[in-house]
Image (cartoon, rainbow, N blue to C red; front, side, top):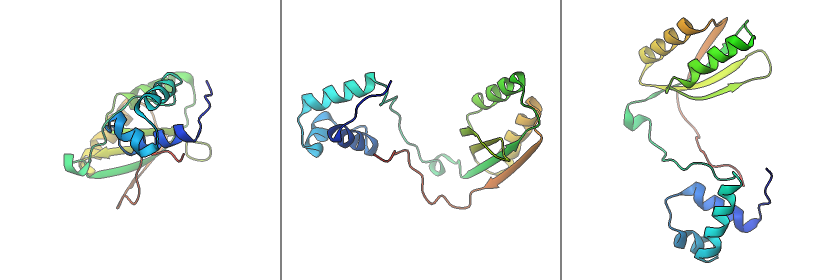
Length: 153
């Protein structure tokens, strides 16, 4: 469902992306509106699916999850059964933060967050024991330069 978003909605969305724990009064003040219209717009955007679930952003390093790997996967399997097994394996693993099916030479890319290289190897061994994979390349991120959940509005 496509919903019409105006400049006031964009201001509200920008504030929610910056900090969703802000009060309606704070958002209204920062967007030059008042509490009731802000609440109504938020409610409308939630109903339309523009605003999804609200979560908290955690610091992986503070939790001991210092290694971030980008895993490039090529497969020779493209049948529905294999894909269902592969997707189920990814969904069951909390280490997998993102998974994308790609166009081009690489079939899938995963973003995997673990404690260290040994933990990545355990993840890798478990994954290949569940599903056949033709080729896996793991790239260790040496430094996170930018990471955001904020969409450009």
